[in-house]
Amino acid sequence: QQQVKQSPQSLIVQKGGISIINCAYENTAFDYFPWYQQFPGKGPALLIAIRPDVSEKKEGRFTISFNKSAKQFSLHIMDSQPGDSATYFCAAVSYGQNFVFGPGTRLSVLP
Amino acid sequence: DGGITQSPKYLFRKEGQNVTLSCEQNLNHDAMYWYRQDPGQGLRLIYYSQIVNDFQKGDIAEGYSVSREKKESFPLTVTSAQKNPTAFYLCASSILTSGGWNEQFFGPGTRLTVL
Image 1 (cartoon, rainbow over the protein chains, first blue to last red):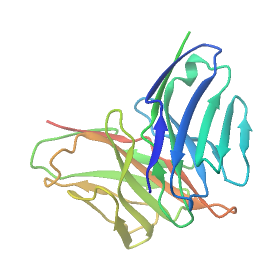
Image 2 (image 1 turned 60 degrees about the horizontal axis):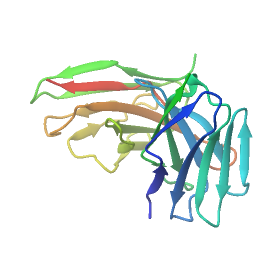
Image 3 (image 1 turned 120 degrees about the horizontal axis):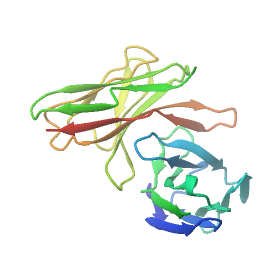
């Protein structure tokens, strides 16, 4: 029940296209859902996060969509750029507990 | 310049040796964490500490040890008991936001290779 599933494992998108990464969870106690971006050889960096009281959050080209009833959330990257090529991790956490991370999605944006 | 520093960036270990990875933060965060990342895999929690002089095992603590003598420091020792230590090690710290949830920040990582 603590697991966070993430798909796809890898994703190839043309420059200017939309990248979509999906995550699903079981534990209804989760109340914070961040996305992290990691470049090779670097530590993950917080990209955007959402709480379940909203269905969507947008920051620039990055949008999180959240479906509480389906226990799913997704990251959309609009107008994808080669500089967005990285590994993306979703995570879920409940108050006072440790983060649970998805296995990651390796995104490649072709020029 | 606030943040989390990890050293060294690369570390090579001979079989049977213990090695210690350094993690320092000047963010004044109470909680600190160690994760292990293997190629193509997610982050697995090794140890975490919520306050000084206290720490708990994560999901894969066997073969590792930690200490938390100072708020800003959380070193990780990879012992000879860890049979497959080659991996990328990430240190993180977190703060409880005004909204009531933890926001976690990561260091740049240490890549450990066993020769």
